[in-house]
Image (cartoon, protein in one colour):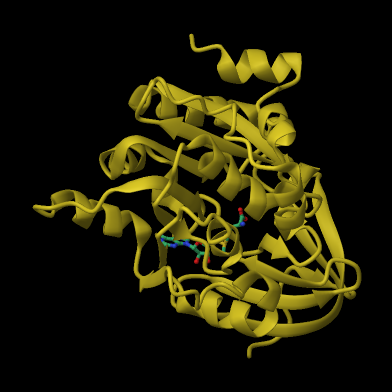
Length: 299
Ligand code: SAM
C-alpha cells in the first residue's frame, strides 16, 4: 500500500470539481485509510469515513459510500428493470462494487446477469470492505467477465451470433480514465446493437444539472441521435458532487414507456427497496424549468 493520498489533507478527503467549478469541493473526514494503491487501470483508495461508512474512490472521484450508495444503485437498476415488461437477460458494464448486481437479482424474472468489469482490484476490495454492496456477486445468476466493457460490446457486435440483452446498465466511472469511451456515440450504437427488441439501456451521466448542464445537453444529443426514445432522469446522492447524478435512459422501441414503471405490491416495494418506488421513478424525470428547457429542447 503506497503513502498518503494526494486528496487527503489534515484528516479530510476532498473531491475537487477542478474542471468546471475550480472553487468547489466536497469533503469527508477520514477515520483511517483502508487501502491505497494504483491498479493497472486507475488510482484506488478505500477509506473509513466518520459519517459515511467505508468509501471507494477511483482517480480521486468518490464512487460510493456505504451510507448513501442505495440511492444510486436502486435508481440505475430499477428504473430500467421496472420500465421493461419482463427483463430476463441483463448486462452490467462496470459496477465492480456489486451494488447494481445486488439490486438486479432482486427481480425474480431475471434469469442471467453478466457483469463486465475492467478492474479486478475493485471487485476484490469491495468483497473485503463493502460487503453490503458485493453480497450478490456470488449469486448463481451472475457471470463475471474481467475485461473492457467497450471492447466486450465491440467484439460481441462482430461475432456471428450476438448475445442480446433486455436491459443494459452502464455503471461506469467518469469519462476521465478507463470509462472515457462510454460517453461517445459509438458506445451508444454498440448498446443499441446489443439489445433485444423492446430493450432498455441506462447509463450514469457523470454530471448533473447544477454542475455541467451543457455537457448533459451534449450527451443527450448523442443519445437522441442513436435512440429515438431517450430521456434524462436523476437520483439524489449526497456524496456525489452537488448531491445529484444524472442518468440517461433509452429504448430501441418508441412504444416503451420509460417514465412509467410496471407496478408491484407496495409491501414488496417497501420490503425490497429503500429509495426506489414507482412514484419516485416517475418523479425522477421531472426537471426544474431551466434544466428541462436546456436538456429536453432538441434544437
Ligand atoms: N457508482 C459509481 C459512480 O457513478 O461514480 C460507479 C461505480 S464504480 C464501481 C465504476 C466501475 O467501472 C469501476 O469499478 C471501474 O473499474 C469500472 N470501469 C471503468 N471503465 C471500465 C471499462 N472500460 N470497462 C469495464 N469497467 C470499467
